[in-house]
Amino acid sequence: MRNQTNKLKIIAILFLSFIGFTSSVMALQTSTEMRTIKKGKFTLNFICKSADFSEEINQKLINTFFEVYPTLVKTYNKKSPKVVTFVVDPEYDGVAATSDDKVIFSVKYMSSHSGDIDVVTHEVMHIVQAYGQHSGMPGWVTEGIADYVRYAYGIDNAGAGWRLPDLSEKHNYQNSYRITARFFAWLELNHKGIIQKLDQAGRDKTYEECAL
Ligand SMILES: [Zn+2]
Image (cartoon, rainbow, N blue to C red):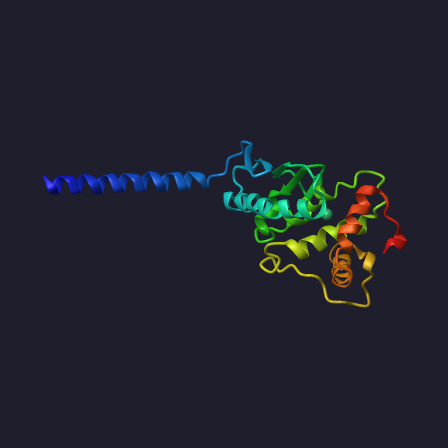
């Protein structure tokens, strides 16, 4: 009788382990349905349009959003949208792009650069920036701030081999992206809070070249 009970227990454990195993495998399958993930004040609507795309990378995109976005909202623009949409799109040709509260990621790029997860950090900063049209902010400042933020708040730039370039005579601070970001990092080091002011000037439409 005792043996019988032990046997039943073992079967039950095996059965439960099997269920656990199956559900964890199923959880890693990629769904193309929209999922809505809510954490605290923030909601992410997530759509992956490719069933072949890695679910592991989807999870990394989602986790990076929740790790980085609330901090950027708090630091730069508390009025930023609380609901954001991510679309992982096999038809999209670039790396990633943001308009309003929506970011599109390229299936091709993210599949071949799965470590470059701080593309999320750069793109969601564009949501926070929300300069709109006619802000007077030049593109090099907008992109420079987004890359500065990636440098300052990114979660795994080293893992992606992403860093600010060394100083070179060929560089000009208006070269945009990482080159401008290095200039902004230097500015922030010497004038704490200046990037927050610069970013705010974009929303207030008060940016002037002499402000730098
Ligand atoms: Zn950008």
